Structures are given as C-alpha cells and as structure tokens.
Image (cartoon, rainbow, N blue to C red; front, side, top):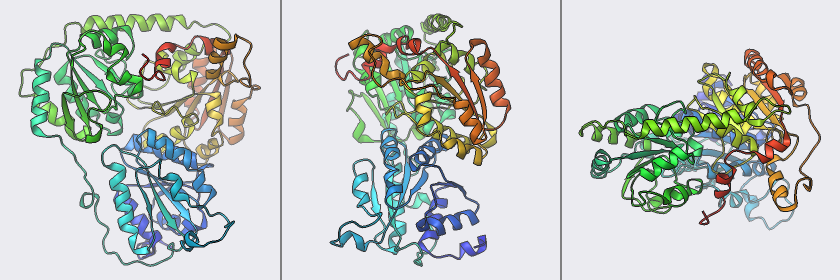
Length: 572
C-alpha cells in the first residue's frame, strides 16, 4: 500500500496506527508476525519507524528508554504465545520503573478461550499472566472496541503513577473494517495537565520562604517529565542544597555547586540541618530509607515535608507529609516558582559553600584511591572513560558492581542517566542504549557503561544497533564473573570458596566486530582514554572491553554498606 492507500485502510490494524499517531508515537518495536504485518505495512507507509529486536523483552526495554528521553509512552508488540511470553520481563521491569510502555500482544482467535480442548498450538490465556504486573489489561473482544480499549490503556498508563499496560489484539480482527469516525485527540479522553491545589501551593511557598535551611530532594520523575527548565527556575528561587536520588543522578549535574550526593557526609549534614524538605518526582523509597531512617533520623527530625506527587494514594504512605502537592511535577513546579516569586528572593543557604567544599574533597579522595594499577581498578576505568565522554551524552549504566562504581566514580555532567535503580534488572543496558539513541537521533551520543555479565543478556542486540546505524559506545568492565556474587561467598565461606561465579574470558570486542561494530580490547590503564576516544570517533556501534581486577571489583565496591541498607527494610 502507498501512503494514500494506507489512509483509506479502515481495518482495525490501520486504526491502531491512527491511535498511536494521535499520541505522538512514531516508533513501534517488535517482530512483525503475520498478525501484525498489516499494521507494520500501514505504519511503514506513513513514515513511522519500525524496530525489530532479537528478543521481545529487549524491545520492551528499548521502549522504556525512549519514554524516558521523550516523555511520550512507547509501544512494543509481541506475537501470540512465545512472543508474548518474552515480553514478561520487560513488563515487570516497566512496572517497577513506572514506565508507561504499551504492550500490544497478538493472540489467536477469541473462540479458543471458551473451547474445551487441550494442547492448542501457540495458545495460552496470556492476559491473566500480565494482570499482576501492569496497570490495565484490555482485550479487543470486538473490532468496534479498538478505540475504547486503546483510550483506556493510555488513560491508565499516564494517570497517577505512570506504568505499563497490556492490550491483547486477537487475529480475528486484524483485517476487519471499522467505521469509528475521526480519531480523538488525547485531551478529549484523558487528563493532559494536572496542577496542584492553589491553596496548597501557597502554603508550600510560605513554608519554603520562611525556612532557615530548605533542601530539595530531586527524583527521576523530573527527568521522565522532561521538565528541566521548570526545575531550574524553581531551584533558582530556593538557592539551597540539592540532593538527587540514586535514580535521578544527573537531573541536576554533579558539577552544580548546590549538589550533594545522597549518603555522602556533606549531604548527611545538610539533611540533619534541613528544616523543610521539598521532594520532587520521587517515591521516597527504600534506597532513600523512606525519608525516615538512617540519615533522616539525625538532626531536625521534625523537619517539614512538601511532596509533589501525581497519585494521591501515595501521599503519606512511606512517611508523613506536611504539605502534599497532588499534581504532575511538570505542572506543579511552575506553580510553586510563581508562588515563591511573591516572597522576597532567598539568599544562598549559609552552610552550602562549606558543605559543597567538603563534598568535593571527599569525592576527590575517593577518585584518587583508584590508581592506575594493573590489573585495572574498576574505579580508574570509570574515571578515565567518562573523562572523554561528551558532556551532553546520554549515559546508561548496567551491572551489579559496575553500576556502583559508575555511580561513585563518574562526575555526571549530562542530565540524562538511565538505569534500573528501582528494580536492579540486569541486562537492560544495551537495549536502553539503543532506545536512547533512537530517541535523540544524531543530535547527541549515547554511552553505555556495563559489566560483562549484564551485557551478555542481550548481546545479540548489537546486530540491531548495526542494522539501524545507532552509534552507541559500549564500555565494558570485564571481570569474567558474576562479580556482585563474590562478596557474599567471601563473607560467609572465605575467599576462594565461590561456587559457579567465574566463567571463561570472552573476547567481547571480537564479538562486536563480528556483528559489524567497532571493537577495542584494553588491559593497560593508560590505554583506556584512547580506546574510548577511538570508539566515539568510529561513528558507528562500538564496544570497548576493559579487563579489570576481579578481586578489587568485588571487595572495594564504593559505599557498599549503604547499598546493603537498600535491602534492610526497617533495620537501618
């Protein structure tokens, strides 16, 4: 079909494309099974981008990353039976990461649901498996329901706390014609903007204006909302310490003189001194000790809390809240900045300069501890590699030990840092990097810093990167082991007593070359920067494998005791 013909196609398949385009979606991830081939043909004729991954869960992770970089929900399809089963890991991860990914599942004809027969080929009651993982499960029982099912899916995905949804698309309806009239704009069927109650905004502004030492806790919801300009305007009014959550590192770059990293001694001092906390785009979850325990249990424990949160059901659950601002952070921050403008502008918090100086001195001490020894120190790898990563690059992290080293040894200059720090799901890194590169196009570069174990989950997607000409740069901290598993064995049984942790060294650089990517192998500390620079200069998918000391990797993880408290529940 030519594009003009696709516009006159009135099948359910074409209508689904209409509905996706009405939401501003221009990319579909998934492998085009016969049940989706008409949809793909129509989408291609209309200029949409189609990306077939090698595994459906990888496609789901790509969609998740695109949401984070665009602020728009994204779509992944799965073919009936096995293809849909492969979507499950991505659906669970999207639920934990609050990502509004639209999972569209193919299915055999509806009549099989009620047939009393056994052993139906490529058939299983798929929707029930997703019910616990997603916010909404919708099945297109009749062709005429396609609009209402998709509208409800987008409504649920983007209302309150964002999250994934599941739509089942039986092949009964692929080629059925429907006459449903013009496609409605999103504002006609779901909430687009959500401002907070003006009285609550005034109360929050009053509290902040009178605070002696306010503190802003910035979460990754601000990044997902793409609300950087509104954030900057608000922070300019407050002139106080900024503590990013672990998942929000980079939302305010580490180089900003107001930033203090959570759990650092300087940040702990600022938390103890804070009399008002403004929490933006964060769940105030376990890895922040729910805003109650550990670092929060010191100093002004009666500090007041202002919380910007979309879902009213989340207010006061993890900790008491004094002033709830129920609304979308992208809409509430301008409200709050405007309200603060009615008060005298604050001066910089007096202690901030000293806290920042102490913070930077402590970080420098940590950085200096990662010397250029051989075998290579993982911290030295991160410092050397990130020194030549472009300031505006999207940086993706993956892995166990590697993620902790990256969090502590990388001075983040870019506002876009992607990871699964809510779920800790290994293997998302390469798909995230591809989704991010699709989102930013040729305007920015994307760099993945990953462990070798994590990379191997979806290494086949290197072919997708080459096929789609996505010039991601992958830096691999390679210890040829499940590095995060070593410390547990060491502590309980002693060094050398590990079981099924090590595996043989793999030349990942040669695998990359086999896919058609650029490959580099580094085992000397002085060669890291040059290899990373060449990888970026190659202007195509590139992988730099850096061999690190496996013992250092396991035993010198920075701030490891803080990481342990993420699992401690109330025992911190």
